[in-house]
Length: 291
Length: 279
Image 1 (cartoon, helix red, strand yellow):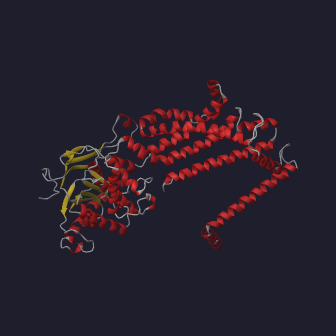
Image 2 (image 1 turned 120 degrees about the vertical axis):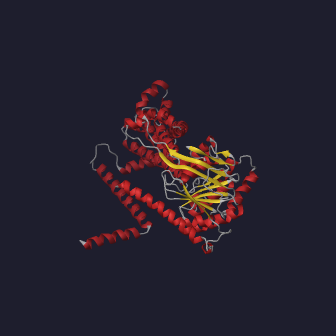
Image 3 (image 1 turned 180 degrees about the vertical axis):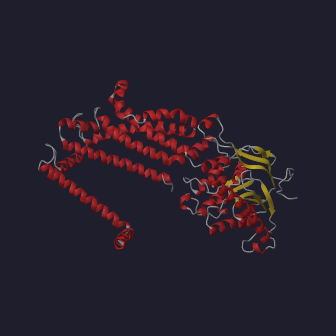
């Protein structure tokens, strides 16, 4: 069975079920807004999305900008309310944020006043306050080692490069040992070379831990390198899931040999045509509005 | 035309390429030259009676400055007190009033920054009282407190509370949403978020507020003390009554110097809490 089919039937093996989820950002329609002529219509960001995600799979979400990818991730993280439908994690509906989900942010979101070690400690201490000092230090050390930052523990974020900062972000998310790792365009702010290094790191770490990952990305190559399934969304407003691609490449994967797989170019072409079609429509709508 | 353009271009370029040390040396040179010109103008002007009668010469003022700074601590009663004692009295009043003001302003600012309701409720007080001149509080303070010492402290408090309060509220209200999301995703409690995330994140703004408040305290104390009993402000007032201008100039110089020192302490503190952020 297709592990991430857009379906209304609940898959029994799914770890995360997104069921008919809709997000509407409420506009301004009160009497005061009408008086000041600042009314704003409701905005439907995503409409009736259903998605089943099975454990230990790496899922990428790709789509034109402004299609509500981040909104969907925000709702899974519990940072945004769900207008309609529900998201169920391990048979429990999500009502708010929780330590079963770790989040990696696009612009790292490290606390500038904390060292690398303190940033990770803040997360571990918040989620597992009962840990002994010794166990806490061990968890922190292990995760710093995991992302290859041993030796930089006492540095502050402003002393690190973008790539190193995101390594801290990844270590912080993993240190609380979440069931699902959520990544919101984690490498979007990095240069191409650093981006490649970090993708390889993520691939290596994923092979070790096999956590469920949901990653938002703009990059076709990145999605193909890392994911088991790729969810392609249509343009917003009222974005839907357009198509879900299975990525059959064997693991562990290698960026240099991955394009030799017979399915690689067909998958890439399909994603490109989808993205181009959707982005072209977004641009056309924008130009029309400008006129 | 073209020629002059390339010429100015070349000058700008050579200026840009000049090492930093040259610029600093130039600045020090210009400072010293302007200082010498100023002192000479003052000395000659005073000697030849270009200014009003009784205006002291630069050398006389300098001589007084050396005397006062080498004899800072003597005590022949309130009207003949060493400048060191007067300075300490002023600093003590500033310290008490300023610390009390900060102890009120920071927590209240945090509350106003976190809660939009508290912000809207208390902002009218801030906006109304902030523009009131510190000296307007003086009669009220004297009447209510019936004590010049306490009145001085009260005036420092009431005038130095606003910048810290406003900056703290601003900093707390504008904490980067990403930091709050991090705390939220982890499920951090409200208090943990406030103490571990919001306050450290707003610290550069809080310290900027404290720095402005300190500057205002130092401005206000001298004015307030002219109407109170002791301190640097009273020293100036006393010398005005004695009509001895050199000592007034000495006091002005010392007030400026101490203000500069206080400000640089806070400038260093600002740098210390910035961690690579520009504040």
